[in-house]
Length: 434
Image (tube, rainbow, N blue to C red; front, side):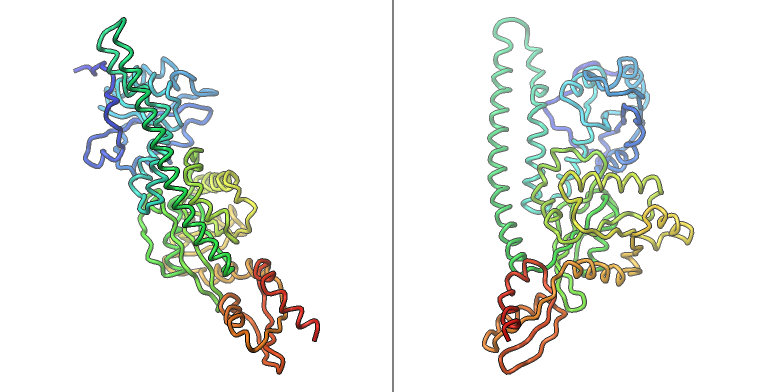
């Protein structure tokens, strides 16, 4: 039986996660100068979302067609392949404009979504905190606002001429106004959550505990590494974007405390609206004293190079590319001697670790402490015996210090970061005036 040519029903939201009930068979399309480059990652995204992939088609061209993404002839080929594979969903590797999406749906007679829609679906599945859920809702609302016209195409079938178009146009404007109101409401609620996060961050900065952020390509093993280093009970699964909400824990090493945060993983072609929507979450990365950039040592060499390039691009996009960093190759327990040598060739300065076996973790902790310590300032302080609170504070935040009890007070030699040094500098003047 031939495929029905009726327009797809746009009244119901498209949920990639429905495939978990066997309802969606996804056909992938991509166009551009290297159309195959992003398909492996898109397949992983769809696998995480639960879709069954039944086929793919690519078109080599300088730029995607502005109206239909694919050329007319290629669309006809895809339509035949959809018939043969019984696909009921087309997924594009790039972000589609509303016009491209409508044109493809009209020509192919099945729902069409893009990479951004898939990522948003996965984010919705994995958001656990109130902030994460609000961020996902905001991104979805802003993404769908430009696509609302298609929701009301069914009204066009009421007839033609006077009196048939007005209700549809009125309803569209009503929905757009409601969506914009909802966007404003979500933004207000997010500002409240962000204010709470800002107060917590200000308290950490007041105590001047050094902060470390784990960043890297999604599914590189950051959460497993976080658990190995801090003992934190964080969720760990072998799928993209399992960690969406940042997890922050205190790490203690050689008597000094650090704040370590496990952040959302990066991917290629990370949509700009997701970067904007998750600015508060990514701020934990931007404000860190040190980045531990984790890569997956078990990935194929070419894949790992491309993943590292995606991480670098995202760090530049959020303004975190100037923060001191340590590169880490994780999962080396899965590599033989030759593979480890190849990994070193790609990242000669990286520390090789296994979050599962513990290999290299001591070296990583020492390198992290050394990196932070290199930016500390040496101070000799003389604190009155009566100021026990300041002495206790220094013991708590500095870890490695020496003290000598003198008749006129307690002499402490300590290394502090610039913010801490400014707070206690007045006590160094007492040493100079002795």
